[in-house]
Length: 164
Length: 163
Image (cartoon, rainbow over all chains, first blue to last red; front, side, top):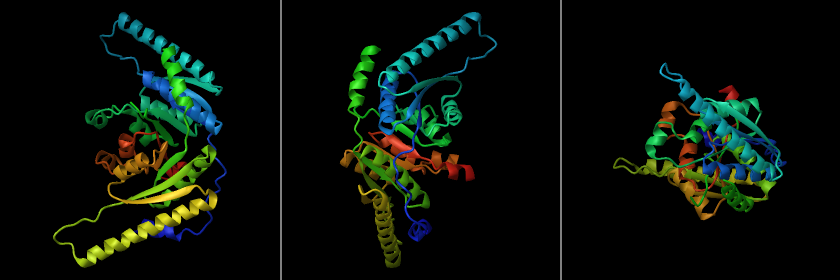
């Protein structure tokens, strides 16, 4: 009720609606087939509002246990290179749409790194995809968008592929 | 991979944001959310619909006439507040309607979005504590999981800095 009264009490003019002031969009992708759709949506969205895109992928950190052999380390490096190449290909694809696109590749916790990257890059918007995991996945925080949502300091757009 | 991307580009090139549903809880933050959505709607040339879902009347055997009347008055006041907010948005951007619903906020917002075939839902998050998130009191993640279209969650940066 208090909230309603506060809304009622507002008498100043409504904020100037001069069009969107989104100039930089951070598109966070996990490089699954869904991320290609998320990146394409991000590029089209950026084109619509006249913004540039930063395509980000966060690679999980190297498992540092005392039993990790040279072989494990090499395999980790190989996967990291492979993922970096896939990110580069995705960036080329975004470039083809005519949208300015930069790359950001980080290692660490996905939600944390996305939020840090958005702050570092002064992004006005984060776009990420959602895979609709089960209840347990959500409970144990395996679903990244809500984790990003609660940490982010800027608006977050979560893209659903409607017909999936 | 290229095949997938080509297919993806064809689908996304059809991206046409024509209808935006804006979920508001009528707190002071709602005006900022509506203003943010209006800016975006103007850029896209989209229509926007403000949606507020009012909690259903708790019916128990102890509900008195007085409690019922108070509930009805709160409901009417919420409806008026939503109308006022829509009018304020229209001062800046004319393509704004509103929808008042009674029920669970996340359910009702996603239903309106489905009914209107919305291309985007805009809502706000108030960065609640861990326990409120665990018990689903923050509506943004609930809308996120129910919606079948993209969801934009708006944070007011200045407010976050003050928090």
